Image (cartoon, rainbow, N blue to C red; front, top):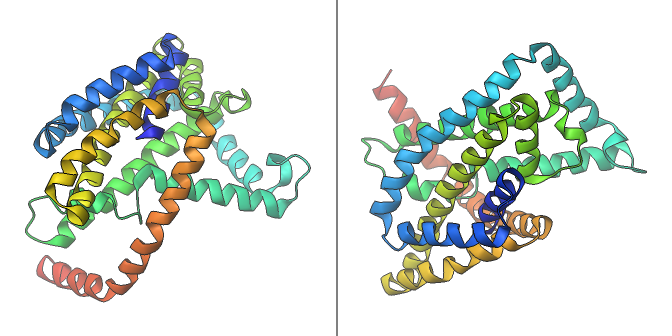
Length: 282
C-alpha cells in the first residue's frame, strides 16, 4: 500500500500541486471507507473502476503513439541499445548494465502483474467458475494486459516524447511524458489513471492481506489487520520514493520464493487439469 500511495501522492503533487500529506489523508479516508466495509464493498468498487481506468489510460497513450508513429522504431532500438551497452551506468561496464537492466525489469514486471507472487490467486480463488483452468486463463490475460499492453504503452510514450531524458522519476515521469505528448489533458489523464489504478490495487491488496491474516490467526485478527493496514497508506504518501520501492522489491522477492516452490510442487496437478480442460473444450 505504501508504493501505491507514494505514486498517487507523487502524481497529484506534479499535476495539481497538491501536498503529499494532503493526498495521503484523502487516500487513507477513501480507502478506509471501502476496506472497513469488507470484501463485498471492495469487489463493488474495483469492478467499476478497473475497466474505466484501463480504457481511459490506454486511449490517451495510443493517441500519443499515433501522433509519433515514425519515432516508435527508434524507441525500440533505444531500449535495446541502453539495455546491452554501458551507457546506462556511468563508469560501468556492459555486464553491470545488463544485470541492472534485468534486475529492474524483472522487479517492475513482477510488480505490474504480481505473476509468481501468489497474491492475485487469492482473488481468482473467490471467482465463480466451472473449472480452475478457465479462471487461470483470465489470470494469463491479466498479465498480458498489465505488462505487455499498459506498460509498453507507458514506456514507449516516455521514450517517443523525450521525457526519459528529463531526469524525472516515478509516476511524475509518466505524467511529464503525457504532458509533452498531449499538452493540457495529458497530465490530467495520467493523474486520474494513476489515482484509479493505484487506488483499486491498494484496496485489493488490503483484501489479500486480510485473507492471509484470517488463515493464519483467525477471523478476529483479520478485522484488526484492516486498522493496521490503513496508517501505512499515509506513511507511503509522505515517504521518499526510492526507499519505499526498494522495500517493496525486497518483500516481493520474499513472497516469490515460497510461492514458486509451491508452484513447482503443484506442477503435476496443473498439467493434469490443463490437459483435462482442453480435452473437454476442444
